[in-house]
Length: 143
Image 1 (cartoon, helix red, strand yellow):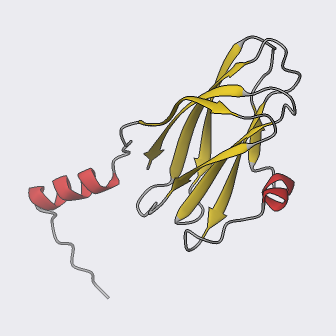
Image 2: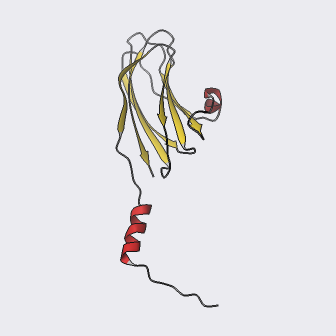
Image 3: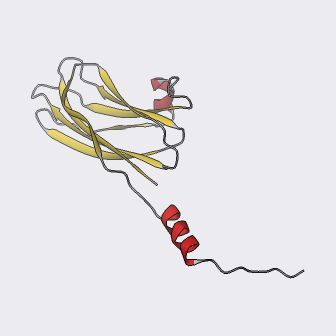
């Protein structure tokens, strides 16, 4: 059995190269000097992840000088954008990161989150039960 090989046109090669090359979206500021109350959380929903393999979130936390606990970032997946993983199950799967903590200081961490579902909820949780924390957050996607 013989096989015929057809040469690729330059236009096809260019289109294929553009389609397969890694790409990154422009970072979007999601929270700016947001005061997250003691023991509370805030959600950032990322929808329509078609064509993207990774969600990236950068979170900056400025802790109160009397704070005793830091910030947790967890991610919850959803097939439809309305029903998300429960926080307990997400944590049981290791789908969270804790920022480093020092009272009165600012800490920032960038986290790569695999886009395993079409929708991801990034949940920023203030683990301190008495003091608020000031949050800045950015997200972008990567393929």
